[in-house]
Image (cartoon, rainbow, N blue to C red; front, top):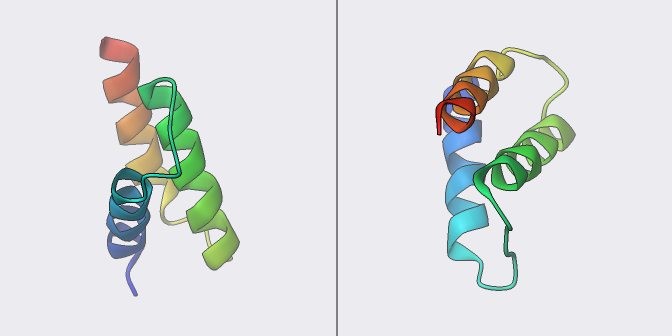
Length: 59
């Protein structure tokens, strides 16, 4: 699975699961990052996480 697909997969998982709740967007990004990091050993996904962090910082 590609890095982008992993990030999208765990984003959807975090949004759809009603037991998981996030106080803000940054907490959501952190949870997605930890889930992806557990699944893969390479760091190619970090460019997508950095983009999501830049969105969080803008607002």
